[in-house]
Amino acid sequence: MPAKLITLIRQKSSRQAPGGVRALVDVLLNRYGESIQAILFYGSCLRTGDDTDGLVDLYVLVDRYRSVFPKRSQAIANQLLPPNVFYLELPVQDRVVRTKYAVLSLKDFQRGTSRLWFHSYLWGRFAQPAGLLYACNKQVEEQVLAALAQAAITFISRVIPELEEKFTARDLWQHGLLLSYRAELRSEKPDKLIHLFETAEEYYEQLTHAAMASVPFRVEISSEPGGFRYRADISVQVRYSNRLAWRLRSLQGKLLSILRLSKAFFTFEGGLGYIQWKIERHSGVKVEWTP
Image (cartoon, rainbow, N blue to C red; front, side, top):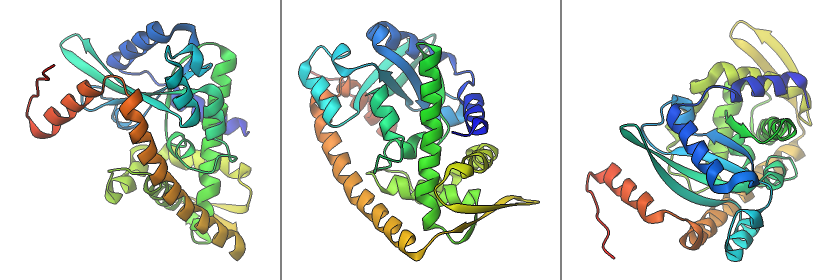
C-alpha cells in the first residue's frame, strides 16, 4: 500500500465535521458503546460541509453484529446481506439534524473494499472522499485508512480497462462513478455524477496518481500542463472480460438493491420518521401518523 496514498487519505479524512454531525456521533457512541470500531462520514453532506440540508450519510463499523443487535434476526440479516440501515433525527440548537446510517462489521468493510469483492457497493462508495469521525484506537484507524486506500485501488483497477488507451483522472472518475452508480438502483442523474469529480478535483487528481503504482496493469504516466495523463497497456481479452464483469455487476446490483429494500421492511428502525421527512421535504405536506 503506497505510503503517499495513505497520507493523502489520512489528510482528507481528518477534516473537521459540522457540529450537528459530531452530535450524531455522540448519540451513536452512547447507543452502541464499545461495539463501535469506527464511524465514517460520506456523501453529499460531506461534500458540501452542510448538515442542515438533506441526510447525513454515516457508516458505523462494529466488532460483530451480535454485540450490536438485541434481536438475533437483525444480526443474521446484517451478516447475510449487509448493511442494515437505520434513521435517526436529533434536535441540535434551533434545527433538526437527520442521518441515515448503515451498520457494518469492520471485517466486512475491509473485505468489501478489496479486489476480492466483486460488486462495487462498498469500493465504489469509499473510493470517494470520506471522513473518519471516530476510531476506537490507533490500530483500527490504520485498518480503516488502509481499507479506504484499497477501495480507491480496487475502483481504479476495475475502471481502467473501460477507458481508452490514453486517459486522464477526469476521464477515469467520471466514467467510473457512472458505472458504479448504474450498478445499483440509484436516483442520481448522469449529469450530476459527472460533476462529482469537480467537487474534489485536486484530490481525485492526487489520489489517481498515488494509487496508480498499485494497479495490476502497466501504466505510463506523463506530466502535462493540465495535469497527469496516463497510458495503459491492456489486452483485448482483459478489456472484454472487464466489460462483461460490469454488466454482471449491474444485474447483480439491482437484484441486491431490491433484496436490501425488502430486508429494510423488517430491519429499518425509524422508518416512519424517515418517510414523514421525505414526504414533507418533496411535497411540502406535513403528515401526522395515526395509531
